[in-house]
Image (cartoon, rainbow, N blue to C red; front, side, top):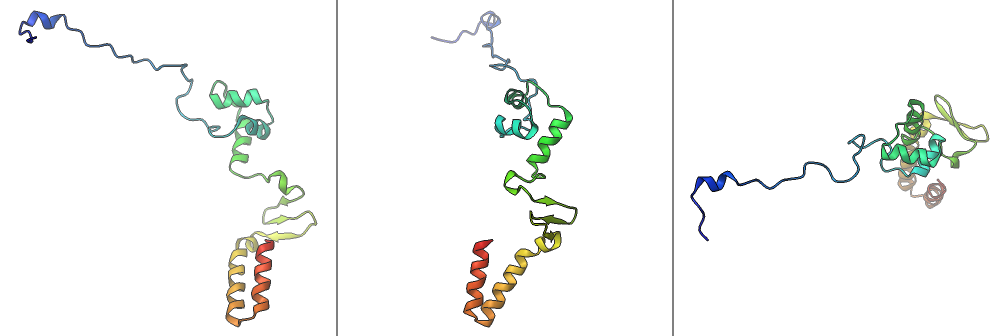
Length: 141
């Protein structure tokens, strides 16, 4: 079939219609929220809310209050000790164990360097007991 060169035939031509509406339920907020990637049970536990509330925050149908959002960020950014650390607490410059022993921040910061130095010293002296002691100390840590 040959193409018509008659301009009146092109006047009635219509472009195919393209859907511009998104398919599915529209979101209130298009960007990812701070709860993305965290299960609703964990959010509910951290923020002390019902699981349904945490799920609504995740989906974006409800907006959390400022204190709840701040509490979530504190947990998310690991500024709170987990339950495994029960009895421990942190002061301005140290961490205190359940027995009351303080470990200063600077000592914790340099702990890895001290372990490397101890191993190097044990290897340099060639003392097998020191090397074995270092390995036991490392396994205990």
